Every structure is written in C-alpha cells, then in structure tokens.
Length: 612
Image (cartoon, rainbow, N blue to C red):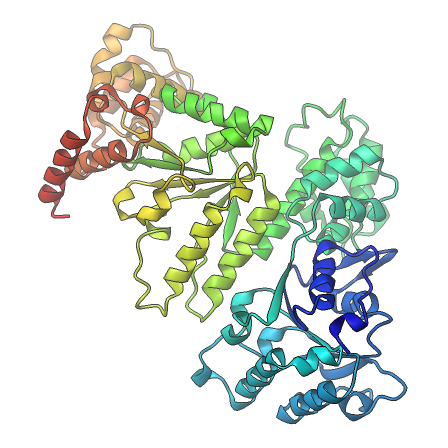
C-alpha cells in the first residue's frame, strides 16, 4: 500500500501540517523532521493541543490504527493500539526503556504491518549532533537504523510514517538532517491570524478591533505564552480581589481607575505585588492617547510582558533596545539625520522598495554611532533589538543559538537589528580552528541578511570602527545597502549644536549669549570626539553647580579636560569611513573631493605608519 493509500486528515489544518500531508500523500517522504516552534500549543476546533497530541489525535486520526510515542523521559509507549496489534505495539501500557532491541522490533513492525506511526519527541536526545566517534553504541545504532528506514521503500509501501521532533536542526545528527529522503518541515511562530484566534478565545469580551491590535503587538510570542498573558493559569500570586484592590491603589485618582484595575487584574494573574508594580509603574506618565484609547494601557502591558518573556527565552542572545530620544536629540549631523529620516518615512509608510536591507554605520570611536542608531529606532517607530554573543563552546550550540535568534527576529518583524562592534561578530574567520562553526555561522547570517523576504521586515544596522576587518561579502549591496560614515565635528557650529543637544538631553540649563566669545572654546573642540564633547559639557555642568552653564564654565572645562586619543589610528579610521561611504554627499568637505587613487594612497601611508 502506498503512502497515498490512507490520506491524513487535513481539514482546518495549519499550513505546515498541510505541507506534511502533501509530501506524504505524494510519496515524497515517510519520515518527517519537525523543527522550530515545536513546543507550543496549536488551536484546532475548541482544543488547545501540544504537538504530539496534534499529530496523534488530529493529523493521524482515522488513518493510523497504531501510534507509538518515544520520549527520552518516558521511553516508548503506545498512544493508540488496534485490536489486532502484535509485536512491539502489543506491549503493556507501561512505557519501557528504548534499546537497540526496541529499534529492531519497530523496524520488524514497519516492514510487516500497515498503518503504523512513530512520534519521536526530543529527537536530539536519541540522535545527538556529534561526530560518530563521540556517540555511544546505542546512539550510533539509532542513527543508522533511522537512516536505513529513510532509504527503504518498505516504510512507505506499508503506509507507515515517522516524525522526529526537535527545536533546532543543529541539535540533531547531521546524517539525518542532510538526508534528502527525510523531509524537514519548520513549524513557525504563530502569525497574526493565529494570535488573534488565541486572544479571542482567551478573552471573549474584547471586540474585533481590540483583538486585532493586541494580535499585532504580540508578534514573536508563542500561542501558549500569549494565552498565559491574556488568561493566566498560575494563581500563585495575589488573590483576584487582592490584586484588583492593589492595582486600584496604584491607579488612584487616574481616569477610569476602577474599570482599568478590573481589566489589569485579569492580565496580571499569578504575579506578585512587586511584579505588578514593576509592570504598571504608577509613577510613569500615562499614554497620551489614554482618554481616547482605553486599550493603550493594555497594549503597553502586553509590550512589557512580551519583552520579559522573549528576553528570558533568548537569555543572553538578544536585548531589547529602548531609547528616550529620537533623531531630534542628535546635534549637528544634518546629512546623516536627513538620510535616516527618509528611511524612517519609508518604514512608516510600508514602502519596502525604498527601505535598504541593511545599514553600515562606520567611523572612529566616539562619533555617536550607537546613540544615533537608538535614536533612529525611536524615530522610525520600529522595535529594536541588539544581537549579543550567541557563540558557545559546545558542539552545535552556536548554530542552535543563531537559529533561535533568527527565528525570533523574523517573527518580531518589522524590526531593527542592531549589531555593535560588527568587526568582532562578522570578522573574517577561517573556521579551521573551531570545526567549521564560524564558516557555518557566517554562511547562515549572509543568507538571512540577503533574503529578499526580509526587506521591509528586518533592517540590519551594523556598526564598526574597523570595516577593514569585516568579511567583504557582508558589506556588499543586498546585505548592507547603505554605508553611512560618521566623523568628529569639523567646525565650531557643529560643536555648538552638539553641546546644546547634550545639555538639553540631560536637562542642564545653559546660557551662551556671545557666539564670538564662545568661538575659541568651540574651535578647540573641533577635533574632539562626540564622547569627549559630552564629557566636557558635563564637566562644565559640575563646575556650574546649581546655576546655568555659562561660557566661563565651558571655558574652564575645556582648559581642564584632557582627551585620551590615538590620533594616527583615528585618522586611519576616518579614512576607512570615507572609503566605505556609499554617498559622497555624506562626507565632510575635507574628504568630499578625494578621488579613489588619492584615498588609496592615504590609506596605504596610514597602514604603513601603524604597522597594519
């Protein structure tokens, strides 16, 4: 009997389940490797099912008389048994340990009986990603026997199917992952439609508009996480009436406090009073749209819980970026701000064709790259995260971490991904000393950065002061389309604008009436980094005490401050920024007229002086 002989149930199935069905009934595969969002729950009718439950009671229902579940913590157990089951499927209900004999009994069953299904949960525990000589005898035997099943037509002829479940492909033995006869199917994080369904079921009192808005803000969350946020099951915190009374005390004298407290009480079930205070934060100003938009506070709470959950799930891998200031708080840099504001306008309007795949911020240390990146994130209205160290010493862990991060980034989009010190994360690596891990990581990152599906969904901002250390292929168009150079302020007007912006950002009063009298101090700081200028401005504030910062305070601060700088290296980094710039209009006057030959000669001279 062929695989098409007993078609899987597909009514009302998600796309990934329909894909399994098409591949199975088409005879493409009888072994499926399910990865990605495999430890979530999935809505089917009025049920909220785990993946193993979904496979056994929905996808395989009515067409597989015998179904076995293998789990490292529970061994092998039969979840569905036909009346005439024999062999391994006729065992007692108590689970038993998986051994080479178990695999052989399963194989005998598959080759002699029709309509069997085997679901292997936490498959990486049975088929770990490690070279063969590191595997135990039992692990090697397991890998070999499943590999043999994939090559045998008997499995499909007998209408049998096997599911391997793992969160990350990199955790699984490469012999199985690379096998073309084993179909890898990714289960994605829930899309907006699924999220809306979960929210609607969790809180039927919400209207359609509220459900859609909450669903849009819940991107990146699993269904089970979203259900817990909307309708928590853990009642380990305050009792309902205590929680509502406590929230009401936090919201005292604020608009609609009673109604808001009742709603927030349901969303904070299971939380302690400290956790509730942290999330609601009564000292923070209310959303400006509170009077017109009663959902605003719920959306803010959703955002806070979402950030908390995702940072915990991706512990140490990503960090959400929050900025109090937009590009309006950036002093000088008019050409850079205009460039970024045009990109922000394209992002807000959804004009993907005008949004670059990525930006390279390049310039010497202290030129404001990080601050501008955060300010741009706020001005664009997009959430932003920073990619942290995802490398690990254990075999397969680096690749698994990277896949987890990329999956989350894709689900959170549209989003900005900020990578500071890009030369460290993306520097050229031979991969010869780490078993090829760096090469594989670089290949995966390059593929993700150049994926056209990410245009308008994921905007990379890579920052570095040493672009010469970056892998050349990373910097090409289609990955980092625009290279934006940053320089130290080159004239007194720019220095003054930066000082004014810094003091305003810190809420420091100042009074500079006589520009001519201020000219010497401003000119003295023309070769200072922005970080140095900020240090001088704050030193002037210290000297001023409780009074407004005056020209005299600034003059004394300039005279007292000693910038620590390597001028030759800074000049070299500036030339590198000129070399990488994608537009001549972004260059300061002293570099704008340089041709390629002159620039190459200057770079060669600096490298020689620095011994690079």
